[in-house]
Image (cartoon, rainbow, N blue to C red; front, side):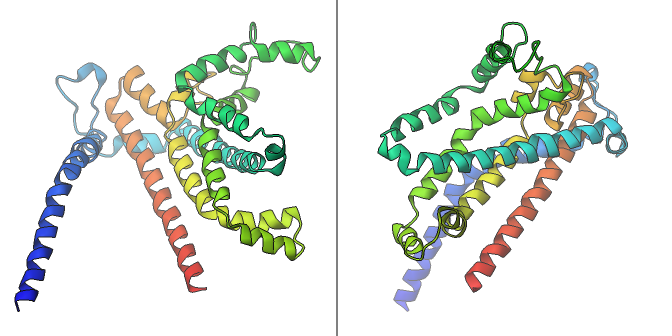
Length: 311
């Protein structure tokens, strides 16, 4: 009986300690996540304006949401955010990250002792602050003094300068290039770390079985990289979908509003048009889309892992 009582006392003490330790965490979650979310949700049902903050906003119900969902401009914003910024941007990043990871782990770089130099050069974009990277890229892409236009014209590829950040044909590829350059190192380093943890016995067995290089990549490397790929796709999607800095500082959502995405739409409606309630409703829709995506994605991953464990 004494032992049982002692065990219960220890368990009670541990539970009390955990609750006390978690109090600061719950406090910060409430302050920085729960309260702003509830406040934003409440604001989305009002017509609160930047120019009428003192008197507050009047309750308008779901009028903001109806106006947003019925707007053709908003459908274009969703298209830009989901397809161009997220699907295309993340796909390019993952594909290039895999290619660079395989290249940096290749025997050729080891033979020429270039692995260290290559990894240092890879870290440079990641260590560059986004604002600095954007300023440099805007100069490189400038149609008058930009080095890229000067190079293209000297090689005879183009006859006249190309306004990469002002022409609809080029603005999205240019924007995705800038985002990829600054964020690709993290993806590549994650895949490199996963590749280096691959057991050598698996590769040796594949070579003994006569597997070609492509067969090794398909049946050995990629299955081993699968968890890292899933994590990076999920994280990159969240980072990219919510991106504001790159889009706003590179194009200002232009030309016109051609590159306007949901994050810039929230800013434009709140601080340019002065419609805080409308902006809050846009933010709630944006958060809802990402929440649904996260739940679906995590469910797919959980079901896949469960099926793998059963097999």
